[in-house]
Image (tube, rainbow, N blue to C red; front, side):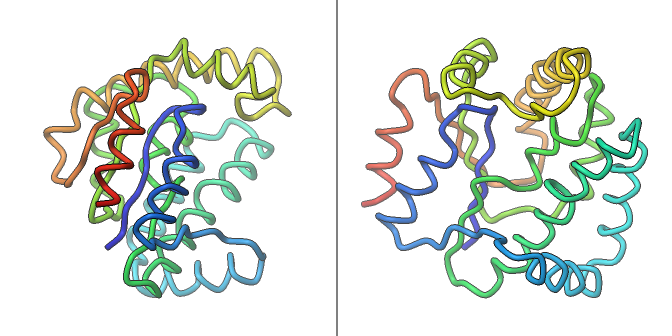
Length: 203
């Protein structure tokens, strides 16, 4: 079984993944070496050539310069492809970051419902998507407390624009989740639902 977690920065995806992994014996999938990154992407390309090139097209068309293109290439496209391919080695695996985060990781601008839904139709889907829902203001607050939000090496102008897009695209995704053919569980981290969920899931 493959579980993927979705949530804004600071929503507690990594913490929840560790709890599930510890209590249920799931393997948290990480890509730690470049040889792993390229090896699993080669296998992914062989197995899913159409999805590989469609996702690459989205990456290129939503990158305004080489710096942001390279960042997305390494941290979303190649990393997520490799994780999905590596996860096949395990009976039970979990991704604390995966394709569905591209709802706001790929797009730098606000998107319509139709465009996000079309993009999602090209993604490989996990057996279960766990959505950790927190308000955007809380995401900003928590990431400020830990010292960073994301993409700290980019200009303030870019980050402000991107964060605005994150807020909109995340809400679009959450509003359309019932129309997407995927098994999912939605939990509210602001109401201690994550702790209760992790305990129940471990039974």
